[in-house]
Length: 601
Ligand code: F6R
Image (cartoon, rainbow, N blue to C red; front, top):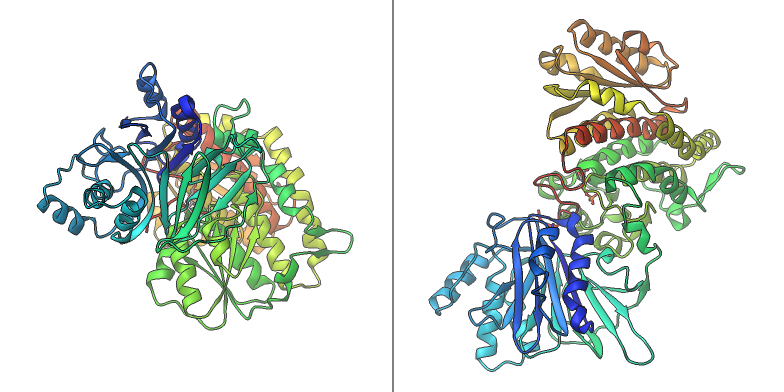
């Protein structure tokens, strides 16, 4: 979704700080961008295109002022044009506003404002906000009261921030869309304050943060900050410290964030396991979650996280706990079966609107909820009864990679911790080997050479059974989102029930086959079926079975249990997708039409 940044106290550097913040937020949206800086007037520079293009435009014409706001957009209302870029201004150009979310009653508000004589320049829902503020100011309201009264009229989801000419303050409010404050205070009173949709935007300046909750309003000025309810009641806020370093949000010499994040997986997985797994005792420590003793588990998630949820449901069922994975939007809008199940939201960002909606619905029906998330202080983490962190570190590439691997490992830890069994010692030993096994794949993979062979393919298919079925789905999702090629994942057994009609000599089939049990043998049967139709076969395998006899190429992984092999096999598919996209020259970290965190339903 869109990214918001605001800063106070930087004087002549305000615009530079905003632009730097926007470039770290570009993963949230990248079809247009802009900044507004307030002094005696409000100066706005905005345009369609990337942040780099905005930086070139701003050079030599830098707006100057004590406070400023910026925005990078992922279009919802109106195409990506200069006019639709944020910030939006009122008729007098004295008020500028940035917004993330959807204002559901904007049409009615716009008609009312137009009838009052306001002129609109864009197709966006956001533009009603500066005009509402303008009306309140014209009616005699002070700046803060004018913003509050405008926000009070909005329905839908929003994180909204405003600056007003002649006023050294940023005003902002949140409802169903994230906002976090950054505090950099010195004893000498030389304070800098920040406001953003995500911590990376200002992490370089400070690690002290305050997470806003729904229904809260903030005022940031060079000499202080306040948080109140929308009605103006003071709110006591905790100041948290962010645990990761600013370098973690850079590319560290890699060509792409996705490439860096694929390579960070061994470290991410070690972090996820550290202090939770005791190999000697054959136990895991998941704190009080171990006593939840759920009678059943529903896992709700979207996209890549849904694939992790499908995998997690298999783990819980194997441990004797009835479990089912649901697409969050279907769970939220359907009539999900609900008894006294634990509802687990699997969400990297903790901000996905579909998943939050499913979790909120479950809570409203009395279910206990647990967020499995990467982002400390995220909405899911704060709203659920409990949070279990996957500890992957910040993920910037739009395509999820290391967080998927960490979700799988975290779900293993949770299922073992909540439903102990006699096989735990073996499962824990296998988990401890995963980081090294992933490293081996990263060091030895021939995925780049395999990708080179199939750049012109019409479509790519992925098959797997059991734990490897979610891996097949995930392999296809990675391939389609970053290469723009048609890719589909199937449960291997389903192939003959329809999809086989699509298989030709132009459609490579990636088959994930680990071990040599009945599932592996059946998948090998499916491999023979596609081979008979002339499809090139790429086997992702530990070499235990004889699948390589039927494959044109082999992507090898070390031998391990079926659950842990899934984590490692997935890395080969990430690399295949990455190298295909790189050789096709795709914008890997910013695939068209996608954004990292989808905060609208
Ligand atoms: C794909 C991808 C998306 C997300 C989905 C849910 O690479 O990243 O499919 O997995 O939008 O996001 P989270 O996990 O933040 O809830």
